[in-house]
Every structure is written in structure tokens, then in C-alpha cells.
Length: 189
Image (cartoon, rainbow, N blue to C red):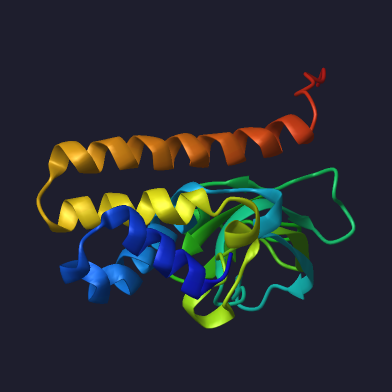
């Protein structure tokens, strides 16, 4: 489904011509929620070996989160996320062991370079015309936009219905990816 088709579907389900001009905002707000709540393989991108400069790296502007990050050449030793205060307070040199976000930068307790897997933002439907959500789970756009429309008109009960359907879809996508990743296996240390 493309952007125009999503807008038409939302308009049809809203059945309110007085809100047609707001549909792009409702879709953008639904995308904002998706970017906060979804973490799937379709959002993953590889971080090639990147040198740590002055204790930090600056990922691309579309990066939302870290899935896994490790010192270059040592993918069996993933770094642990820590509070920024803990990372900044550590005076560790050498290979990093922890990281934290500082604004749009990732800061580390060591040097060298890092590699990893990062989560990126869902391409905005209004700019891309289609994206992996509109092609594979277009109902998320419908449910999310309808929830925003109901909130906009002050229909909290109606909004809750659509929020529930939207979050069920989010949970299903996140769950499907977890199942495809295989079972969790406990390893002895």
C-alpha cells in the first residue's frame, strides 16, 4: 500500500470529511509511535568498523537504538549499555566494555573501533511513498492513524479501541521477529 492509498483508507474508516486535512498528521503520529515501539529485523542496519574519536562515535541520523555493539574483531564480547554517568566517570583505557547515549552520540569507556547492529527509523511514508510497514503490515498505519484521529476529537474510549489494535500489531511484529531469531539459550560462564 502506498501513501495515497493509506490516506484514502484512513479517510474511509474515519468517515469524517471534516478531518481529511489532518490525515497526514495522524499518519505521521502513528509512524512516531512505531519508531518508539517497534524493534524488528527490518529496522536493523550494520555498523561497519567505526573508530572511536574522543571517546565517542556519531551514528547516522536515522539510528534509533543499539541492538548489539562490540569492539571491532571481537563480536563474541558485546558491550553493555550503562548510564551515561557511569561511562563518563570510568577512566578505563583500552578496549571498551560499556557504552551510553549522549545526545546523538554513543560514548565508550575505551578506545579503538566498534562494530555492531543498530536499529534505524522507519522511512517516512510521505517521503518514500511505500516502506516495509506499508507493504507488510499496513494495518498499523490504519490503526495508529485512527487512534490519533479519535484522540484529536476527544473520543478517549474510541481511541483506546484503536490503540489496543495498534499495540497488538506492534507486539505481533516484535514477537514474530523474536520467534524467527530462535530460542534463547542459556550459556554457562
